[in-house]
Length: 257
Ligand code: ADP
Ligand code: MG
Image 1: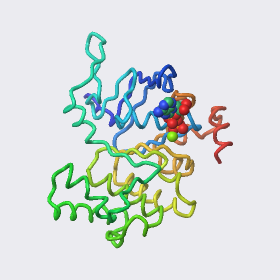
Image 2: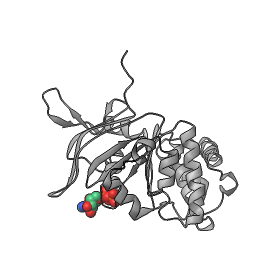
Image 3: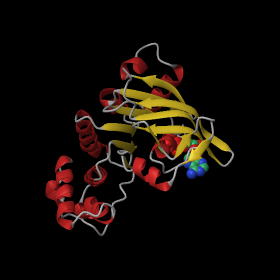
Image 4: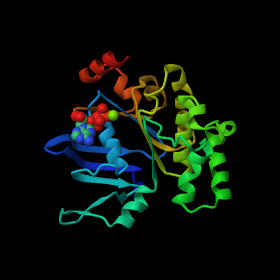
């Protein structure tokens, strides 16, 4: 019996900005239906890796398979790496949603308007269909009662939950989060992490860059520790955090905890 492909399979991924290589030969499998947390020092390449998975950045070498399908580039049998045509890139990207540290909500649109905008303009849904789907997603993040509020009338935690609802409305198979609570006051991070915990429990495949080590240790089924553009460690929280700990991880934890 052949195993189903990983949600994300990263092979030999390198990324350079100009002459500076910031990701070196990354191999990483992201399991389906699980929450994988990416941790590591500032500048270790976490955002760059996530942005490559979202195809917001193009890797310089290597391949990324989403559900077995090549993203952006395909490795031919002769070893040549070729760029895929736009329609094949779009089809694979459509399965990936992303939530950023900055919520990036439209200030002149209500919460519901923010969630439904792409449903109308990109997906071509009718206003009524988009509103129904948008309300369902706002309910999922506990913000149904705030649907008609503008971002300025919402707390940072609520704004980030709207951003999560907006990503969910496009029905991605994979959700990527880049430090989703880093802009929030400490008392507001819990409500966002709870929404993410619930999504994980529902079986959403998530990759979460976070400095919330407690969240990574309890909600993350897998943790990858990046250091200087490499995946230094990759395993379950138990495997990573159990003694004897890798000295670089210990050093990192002492800096961030
Ligand atoms: P992290 O998210 O772990 O803090 P990043 O992925 O943002 O790390 O950055 C990894 C490295 O790549 C850093 O050295 C950073 O300065 C560099 N870098 C990130 N984005 C760019 C860019 N657009 N142009 C040039 N260098 C960049
Ligand atoms: Mg970053």
